[in-house]
Image (cartoon, rainbow, N blue to C red):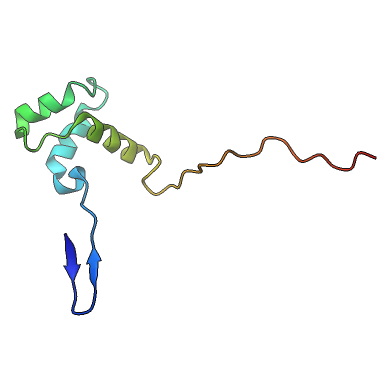
Length: 91
């Protein structure tokens, strides 16, 4: 999917399932803490249908989004931070 202009074509990213289906997201939010993530897709599929049921990994990403985890506004550092200082003059 992309937005077309007379000069350039700008690609757009797909929206997350919780932004596309706020009713499903609200239902899943109510399930958090009451059951395992493994069981949630089948419960959501029984209520909203299998085409709207998010996968286990999608529910885990939603939980990370709610916590403000990495990948949602925060940049993760890939490089380890130094724990020791460089040695100074040894005189």
